[in-house]
Image (cartoon, rainbow, N blue to C red; front, top):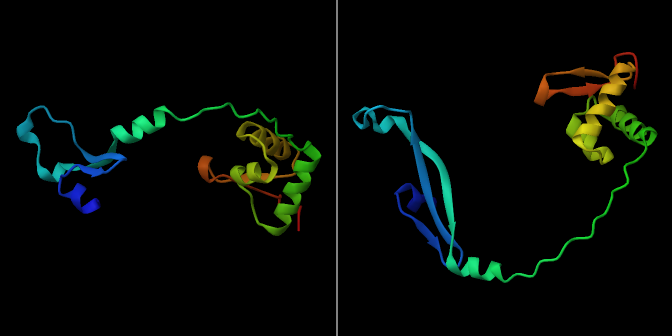
Length: 139
């Protein structure tokens, strides 16, 4: 498929749909300014085929029952965090969310509360931020 797309063809997967590529280049005022070196791959486009579209239009839909997941109490989340940090050097917000089942908002609230209480320190910046015990706490 990649070879045919690279050659400029539109590829059809029977019963599924059509794939094509899109290109982009730097903005120009006159088309004579466009050079092949300034054109590059942008994305792969997909257009659903008639068979797949027809098949999906007749699918049966039903509402999933709403389940409220019980968030562990703060003390339990803190216990899980402490156990984790006793075996790891640091934890990320995503790891904390997975460990406790918290939303991103709740996880950041918990972690910031623990920083304010002096139980955690934070290092890094935004997406690379990690949390750990202060050097005198933990192991």
